[in-house]
Image 1 (cartoon, rainbow, N blue to C red):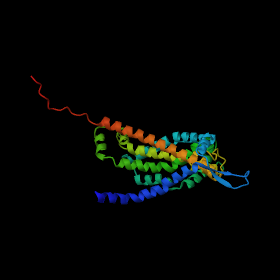
Image 2: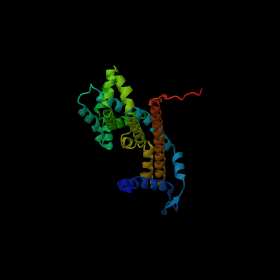
Image 3: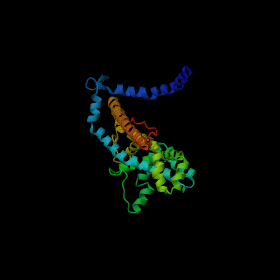
Image 4: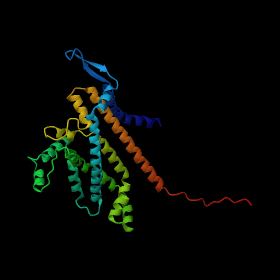
Length: 314
């Protein structure tokens, strides 16, 4: 027993050291930094001093309309992006897993390749494709009578969603496809023998069996959506789009830190965003856990009545 404990400790120690160094310490430092602010003395001509302000930075962030509106942008982004991503990735995975699919490896690689492109490069590519004077796509749309300004206030959110879908659709498709490949083929063959159609097999057998993968991808997608930063930042730089420097909470924190040199406010905004992500992750985990428990209890067979009966007294 002691040998097993020592082995477990030896194997887990590098993880906990790395986790503490790259997660616990930065988060703790951000919380500490959010409690202070720098003030200048002598009507701005003196030096700066760090002053403890308590929760004033949190109050300032929550009272700033730009920061609160950033969460509204994230809400609209999540409502549009997450359903499209999950439905698209799942549909492609089901298509590749079907008997009608051909050249599976080629399409897997072709759909996954956009994920290998760094986010900044992907955003720059799409900025080129969105620019009317440069883009053959926009010119073709105009020639077909489809006028759409990707940089307008109405077109900005769909533009960002399109970039994110192009980056992450193939990655999540591979996760779903791997989960589908792990399904016992005898179950699918039995359903086919019983006369189930391809649609019935896909949505009544395959999808329920990979529910845990759906929950995992959904959770990671929610966390990633709250960290939206790269795509709107590129659209904000010299494109004339409606994306402002505080369009998302991450951009608000970036602007506060590197444009206004208000590191306390930036740290407070980052901590608030991290708390939001933690609460949503907890809610999604509890919700999926309850659904799994309900499904397991519903699928459990009822206990068989005992055949042995007690003799009734005369």
